[in-house]
Length: 126
Image 1 (cartoon, rainbow, N blue to C red):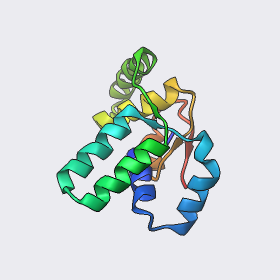
Image 2 (cartoon, helix red, strand yellow; image 1 turned 45 degrees about the vertical axis):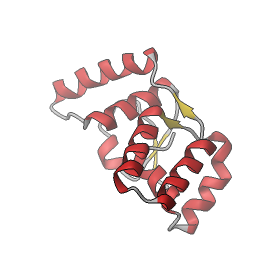
Image 3 (cartoon, rainbow, N blue to C red; image 1 turned 60 degrees about the horizontal axis):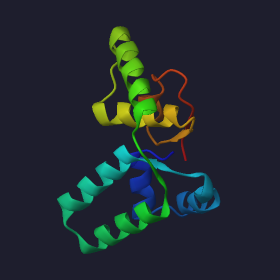
Image 4 (cartoon, rainbow, N blue to C red; image 1 turned 135 degrees about the horizontal axis):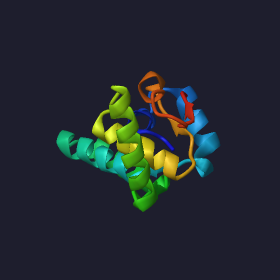
């Protein structure tokens, strides 16, 4: 599962190495509906026809996993644990982490230092 930052890097297409990894793993990749929502917000905020085209093409290509009850349960557990430890995670990032755990997915992110506080969340940095 790609997080929002990683999806944005793919959409921008500035790294040939990243695009190659994306192409190789495309059939195994997905995004959370939370990431899809963040991408749509970024697109609307910038009002760029080219960005709109790229974001929509990406979202049509990469399957979006809904934030369902299993993810909601993960979110509740994670938020309680992280707040108790005094290491809370920003709202959208916590929702994305919960989505990845609910899907039994590896979270592909450039922010491994940020997400490493989430227990049992497998991470990869491309």
